[in-house]
Amino acid sequence: MTILVARDRAHKMKHTVRVRQHAFAIDEPDANGGEDEGFTPHDVYDSALGACKAMTVLWYAQRKQIPIDDIQVAVDRDDSEERQGIYRLRVTLNLGGALTDAQRQELLAVANKCPVHKLMTLATTEIHTELAPAAG
Image (cartoon, rainbow, N blue to C red; front, top):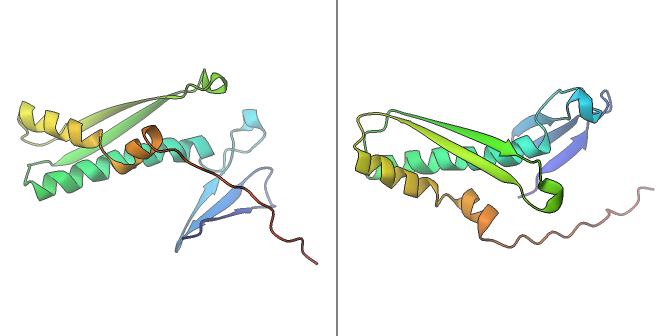
């Protein structure tokens, strides 16, 4: 699968991200030279973790017939030491439904095993960046 990121030349820093038939805007806040026309790349990274946890919990609860009515995930970022190699994300799960304490703990354990959490904490990501051939 290819994700395409293309500059929106009508704006200072805005880009459009296309994934399959979906699209969303990426930009930076005014303080970083953008116009705050969309998510920042960090927002998307952090959101991926929250969304993965929510969807993993829902999938598991449905499969195990755990009576979950609602799921809200808050992801709070502390990037104050990012340049020193420490990027902190604090995730809070708000689970609605007639859940026992044991079910809540079971769902917390499942959330900590979501694929994006494991990717962010256990996998080595290798990135190779290259130039496309020059036009012309």
